Image (tube, rainbow, N blue to C red; front, side, top):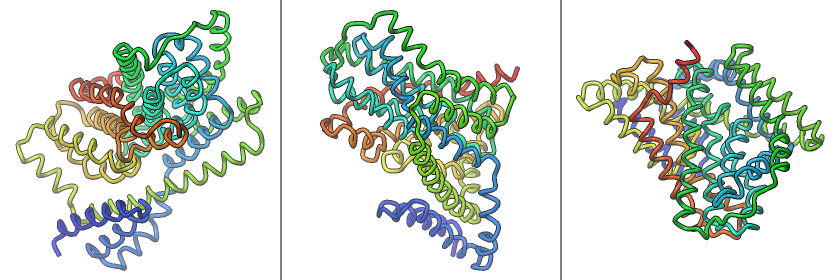
Length: 440
């Protein structure tokens, strides 16, 4: 059978199984194994499986993932989110729409410790939703700002998905962390602008309230010094070359643990629960990573990724047009697939295509630029129906808000994200300017 037809059949069957609710890791792994046997032989599949487990899971870079996940779980159970929202609320909460902006700011700061979008959204929602409801904020604005703010965890370093992208494309993790800083800052600013415009058009959706006395503002700001310290030590140490990303993740776990115990927010049962949750999340990610690896190896045997890259290179199509087509594909697929699965499934196909085109940049700059755009577009999938994971996380925690209102509340933030994607495509230097600045 023609290898290309086998590859197309694999994609169709795999997507069908996912839509039928088969676990993603199993769907990719089973279809990948079947494709591998058709393109090679059962013996070659067994030989690959004999060494692939060890080669994949002994990866030094992959060891970073459980550490950052543990750091996020400890932070979640230590009550850090309440301090972050209180500090943000004290300074900007009294403005019209200020509580929503404070929620976004709190999500950004928590995402810098957690690295997980779902954890950021669910944790900040616990402390921010009651306060918003108390001050008369609409359900749409409350849920929309928290769902959108939660997406910041996927891009703000340390990001688990960004680490996975680095592994798939063999890029420098430290440089990717730096590259994500400017686009992540753009997201925070863009979300706050979206809120400001929304409440100007609909003043009753996010009313203002009396400002907090200045002394309480200072007290609230001082209440998060330890969180700022963790962020500065971990990422500052990594960027400064004082320790590797894995060592930085280890330092972050220890510091977060010390802060949790010192502030009284973390008890033994919370630590045990954090370890169990980390093991479960890590096992899920590792299973998906291995299933995707098996699927992608089978695709590589069919030469489909290389053939696609060669076709685009010889088609005469503008490189920017190809990039726009990929972005549109991600926007559509983001409505029905989760972010990690989409990255693992598509990057091995699209990355060679992008690298084969001439965007007028170095290979390293192109890889960083594509990675940031990919994560930003995948990030949008978390707040776009019908399978926007953050929307359902917020819905499960805010049962008084209709799902339709939650969907509607994300519209201003989706528009903000589309503008950010357009800026990143039009001005690629936004994705690697800081990297070049630090390197020089």
